[in-house]
Image 1 (cartoon, rainbow, N blue to C red):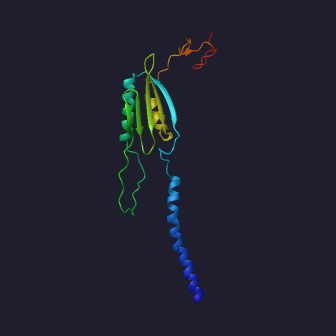
Image 2 (image 1 turned 90 degrees about the vertical axis):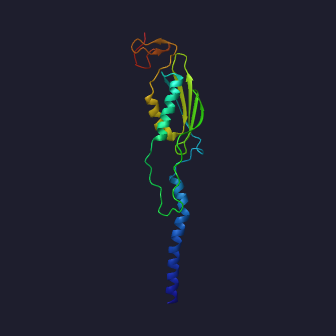
Image 3 (image 1 turned 45 degrees about the vertical axis):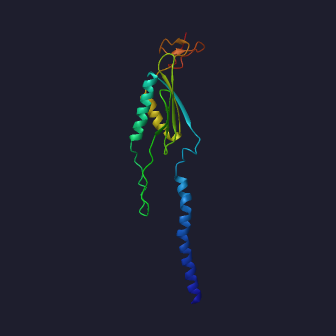
Length: 183
């Protein structure tokens, strides 16, 4: 009888250890599914495009795009817990301008998707070159913004192609844009 009782105590003690083990492992499990914080991740991507807008107009267009990102409400899973003692904290402010030097530089910081830096340069033939340095989480947003700008092909020294009219370097035998043989 004493052995049966000792065996029952050992079985229940193992059952009490299970919730303790789960509680200890929970922070490690949660870290595996969390996005890396933008401040710790040094990986960034770079993109450059040319637009026919002037430098001031391009600066304002980018500023408007980012302000629309700030106002968009993304659907996020509810993080409210029934067991929360302190309630939920308000969501962090998104896409805050950390530096602005009109019309040359715009820097934004976002605690969720990472940092974003725009540099604007006027081109000699008119238009603006926009260079953006961003965290990979923002790639989709940046590509959609780029698609909304009118594209301008910068002038390159060379003769125009007879078929498409784009400048081709003298050493080319075939137009890289349309594939037409150059005389």
